[in-house]
Length: 151
Image (cartoon, rainbow, N blue to C red; front, side, top):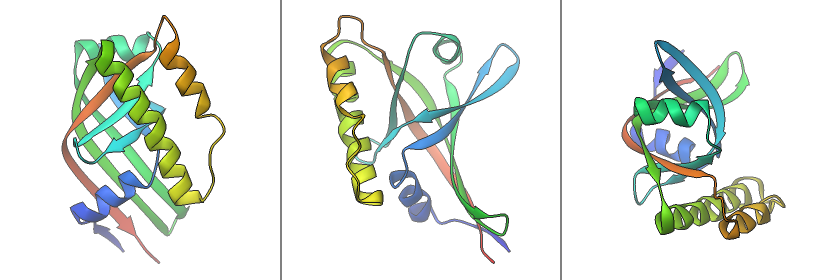
């Protein structure tokens, strides 16, 4: 049986993960790509980063996006949420602050959920010192809903 998830359960799934699928529009076509993210519950947003390219260009043009996060155990047992929001590009000291929060947040999520300290997080600290930073952005959350299927 498939049921609706309560908002608190949706937010819990969002906070206990760091990989999702970002959906955006470019021209008249929808695109979906995997992203690494951090859910900042205090600011009600999702933080991520990217290099300049198709995805960033598209979100600059049409700011409405969706993110889908899931946990699939089997065809009979899964949970999936969809977040609706708007893209906001961050610059300067704000971008550095949010990239730092992203790195710490992903590290903390992995540590909390998997009991493991990721080794790749040190890469983000070095990016803070580079001359050419990645494009740091946040998705301001406007709505969230989800479904669950249990055996």
